[in-house]
Length: 77
Image (tube, rainbow, N blue to C red; front, top):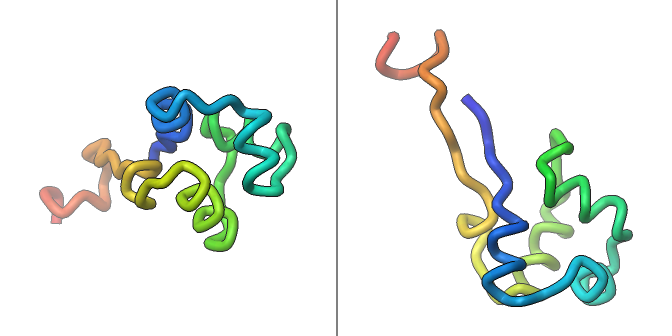
């Protein structure tokens, strides 16, 4: 099971650059780049809220759950 970040897709839909989002959210380009590429294991709710506000979207637009059919999958229980 994993959570996939779709920040890149939402940014492209809104035609917003990483620099512009960084300025609006108050998070460094480096940290936003890590979010964009999925190289993070956590995100603060305050950061998620700021990103959603800047991109005019819902958290569900940015986050996607993917069930890889692992041992904790409900189908396996």
